[in-house]
Amino acid sequence: MIHTPLCDLLGIRYPILQGGMAWIADASLASAVSNAGGLGIISAMNASDEWLRTEIKKARTMTDCPFGVNIMLKSPFAAQVARVVAEERIPVVTTGAGDPSRYMEGWNKAGIRVLPVVASTAVARHVERAGAAAVIAEGGESGGHVGDLTTMVLVPQVCDCVEIPVIAAGGIADGRAIAASMMLGAVGVQSGTRFLVAKECTVHQNYKKRILKAKDIGTVTTGKRLGHPVRCLKNAFSREFLSKEYDPAVDLEELETLGVGALRLAAREGDEQQGCFMAGQSAALVKKEQTAEEIITEMFTEAETVLRGGNKWVR
Ligand code: TUI
Image 1 (cartoon, rainbow, N blue to C red):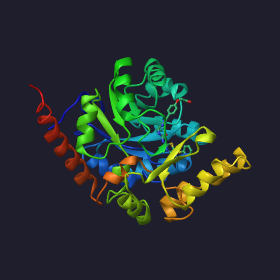
Image 2 (tube, rainbow, N blue to C red):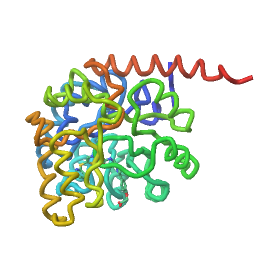
Image 3 (tube, helix red, strand yellow):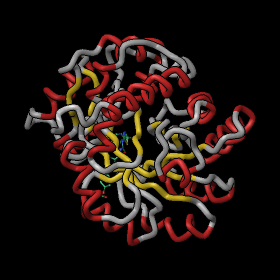
Image 4 (spheres, rainbow, N blue to C red):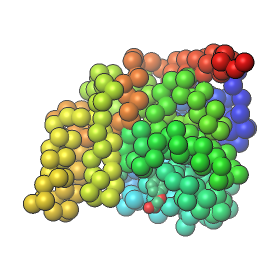
């Protein structure tokens, strides 16, 4: 059994969080992950505060275990959903794509544990001062909006610069990566891509199929020119986006328009041509559709084996 301070902080059996994937992470996936002993997360990004309230209520009928909400700070609904999580007494909030400090006093007063996703040491230190309970250090191997640094170099540096617990994210799809994260100083992990193919994940079947077929070099990052790089699977959409991105005749506004709605098209319609299939580099390590429980127990059984054999080269 693997037990870390993160289990006690969040009241969970296994120190694993499910990534807050927009248009994908709903009550079905979050409750399945929480029932399996991890921390399930509902993504607030999809729609308005009303959608989130409904999804929270639904999840409460599906699990008695704690679950969290992810707030994408660039979302037009960020301020509204920031209120909803406090009113609904959500125990854990993860944030992404920005600085959550303006909401943190209110969330802390409401008893919410705030776990910001950070991609640099500067932001990690900043959110610690603002009252974060832990930080999620996410390397650029992850899917969706990504920072520059890899998990391998980001996690130990974040561990060195904050006192609060550190959770590793980016590239974590099996037990070896959990064990490695712990060797880097993390007390838990967050996985998104592996949970995309959970049986309880309601994403379109074409999305799951694409993840299962992905090769090691199957992802690219689009949107660097726009200042928000996004890692997604290679397909017609990403090829067109990249060709326009490097075409000086295409202005920023046109480029921005090209991406609007593309994640929804992939996740809900399964549009293999026009959809943006956000996924981490670990997609190539994801081999089969399994229940959330099978995913978590398999990952931690493997992590335990790897950690037990961790001293095999030590003389
Ligand atoms: O946020 C994510 N992953 C995401 S958000 C998203 S929705 C989206 N769609 C299109 C364009 C942009 C976003 C899809 N996937 N991961 C967490 C994450 N946070 N990655 C990087 C960061 C981050 C970056 C800068 C966190 C803080 C930060 O602070 C500096 C600043 O500029 O505020």
